[in-house]
Image (cartoon, rainbow, N blue to C red; front, side, top):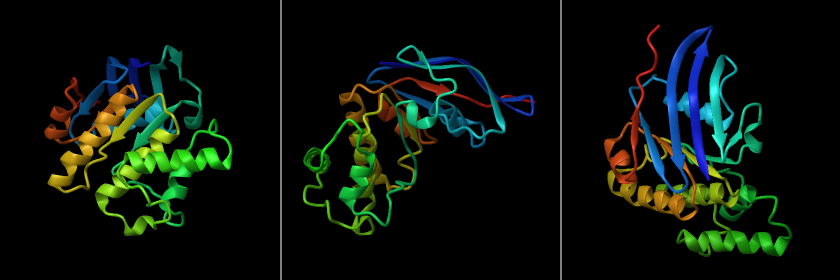
Length: 214
């Protein structure tokens, strides 16, 4: 699998605001996008995921495994995304949050329950299925959010400042957890961050964007 961006230009009212001539993210590799606030980093991820504000127009192509994603709804793109906020559903238990992310290919109550239990064990939270997400620590919530995303069986992963709200000690631990799981799953991964330590921890290339001057 690979994620490829070809000649991407994002425009608002005919004015280019983001330009990225070419970028390829191979399977299992993490590529970092850095740049000042407001330069369009998150908008670039939204373009890839299919959730870009309609105020933007897009030139160029986004390809996943050679397939042009133009015109596909977000749920049909096969792309998982993690944000700074974990976005766990407060009205669902930890196990129900994970079950919500399960791929439709996992059918039957027993199979779905087993998949949730495996995910909890893998992230060090065995026995937490019935817990209220509000009772979890920040690191535990981050791990559940990642496992929920992986249970949807994405073919690429986008990380939009996912470690920004974690303290320094926890940040390094969760960063390693996320990067290792992305690599083990062979997912091309695109990270947006302001933190040079995040970029260094990926071991992959860093692309700096500055936006486009009017």
